[in-house]
Image (cartoon, rainbow, N blue to C red; front, side, top):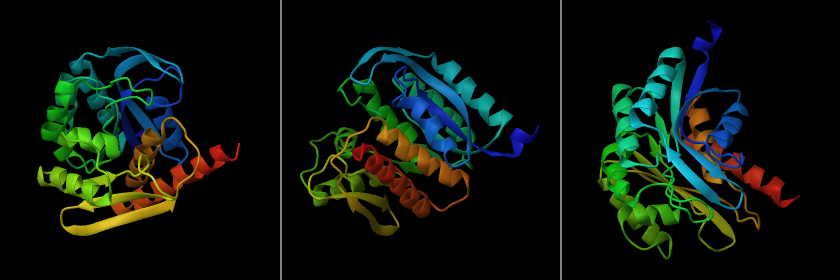
Length: 253
């Protein structure tokens, strides 16, 4: 079949009945770069643009089976991972990643919704940092998620964020993109960290606009570019530029 030869991104994440985030946002973003998707749903949620009302995790074995079916059916050139919900689902997804080390994975460590609802069990964070994150080509936490992943308070400045990021890299991560959207100041700076290279800062004007699903959008855009055989740095730069343009358009409305 022709579809089998086209690059796909395997999207692993939760549903969002409002369409503002989760796999709905992932598919929309990846498709905008002309890349196809296949899916492994980790949780069904009931949510509006204001709140997450219900979360129903999928059986871990079923999540893994969805991933394996997508990988078998298509030419999967990248994996984008979002909401994982439980430690058992993390373990199941990690098992499939270990079976397919040639496919780069981008993990957006979704720990809580914009409204504050927890989207990952607190006890599962250690499983994520120890069992899954070292398998991923890139992990994309914001400043709040970064602090939760290292078990401390959010960094007060860039020096603190870099220190937390280096702590995660020392645990075996391949690369980390620290997102600066929750910082203050006139510029929004993301930092790409890799253990063998100097930090790369990606800087844009800070916009007076908010939009749901920007974390999903950024990780999905990066995964789409990786699927098109671009380098990690180029994929990150193009992904950040894509999100900036979306936010700018949203602010102009």
